[in-house]
Image 1 (tube, one colour):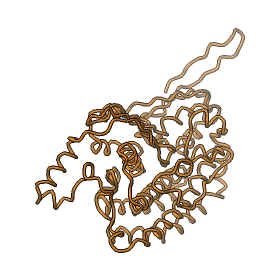
Image 2 (spheres, rainbow, N blue to C red):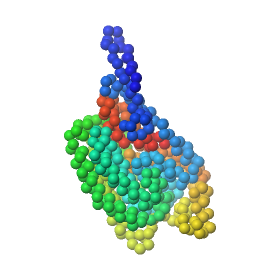
Image 3 (cartoon, rainbow, N blue to C red):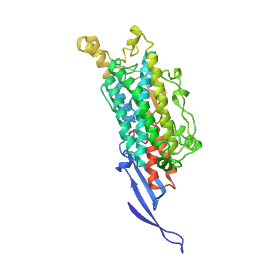
Image 4 (cartoon, one colour):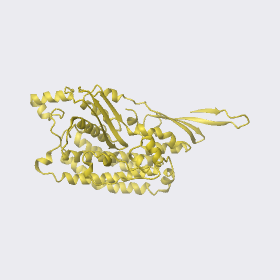
Length: 407
C-alpha cells in the first residue's frame, strides 16, 4: 500500500489517494490474480487488473500432445466444474472425428455436467455470502459439493481434477453406487437449496450489500463479450444449451433464468435459479435412462476403436488390445485435417474450443475460449466509484476462477 499526492491547480486543496494491491495473494481474491486499486478513502477511483500469475501455457502444450493427453489440461481451467471442461473437449474431438455418440451416453454426460454446474454455483453463491459476512450457508451447502465429488469418484476415481469420460463416451458404465448417490442428491439437495435461499434471498443485510452493487447493462455486457450467468443477470437470455444444443439438450425441458439489473444480487438469483433448473434436467435424464432395457442399458461409449481405449482386462491379456492402448495413449494415430469450433455452456458461460489440425498426431493449433478471462475486463467498470468492500463482493459474484483466466 502506498500514498500518492495528486498535483492539483494552484490554489486548490491537495488531495491524497492510496494505492492498494488487492492480490495476488490476498485471501479475498479466491485465486492468484492482482487488482491495483486507487482509493480515495474507501472509494475506488480506478482499478487495474493483472493476470498471468498461474499461466501454464496450455494452448502451446496442446500443440505437442495427442487428443487424450489434452483432457487433463482442461481440468485445470475452471476446476470447480472440471467435468464440463472435459466433456466440452471430448465433444470437440468428436465433432472433428465425425463421431455420433449413443443417446445413453448423451444422458449420462448431461447428468454429470449438470451436477458440475450445481457444484460450481453453490460454491459461488455461498462465497458471496461469506464475503458479505454470513458463513453459515457456505458450511451448510459444502457437504453437498462433497456428495457430488463422491459421485465423480464412483465414475472415474477422481474428485476435483476429474479427467472424466473419454472421446465417444465414458471409460466405464456407471455403477449402482453412483446411481444411488445421484438419487440421494436429488432427494436431499432441494430442501437444502430452499433453506439456503431462505437464509439469503430476502435477508435485509444481504440485499443491502448486493442490490445495486457492481451493475452492468445488457449492452455493456454484450460489448465486453459476457456469457453465462453474468450475461443472463443483465437481461440477455443466451444459453449455449438452447441456442446451439449438444449432447441432446434439445430433448430436455428447462427454463433460462434471466435478471434485469446485472448487479451482484441478480447474479446471485440467476445462479440459484439455475441450480433448480439443473436439478430438473438431472431428474429428466434419470427418467430417460430408465427407459433403456437389456443390452441398451449397458451402452456407455461409441464404437470407435481408433480412439476409444480397450478394457483394462483385455490390455493385460490380449496383444491386440495392448497395441491399441499404446497407440491411443501415445498418440500414434493421425487425426483428420480440419478446423472446428465447439462450445458448451460452462458454469461461467460459453466455454469454447477452437481446434485446427493439419492431419498430424497433435493439434496444429488449439484455443480455449475461457469465459472468466473475457468478463474480467469489465472489473474496473463494475467497481469504479464503489467502496472497497464492494470490490470483493463484485469479484465473488462474477465467480472469477484464476485457473480459467490463466490458461
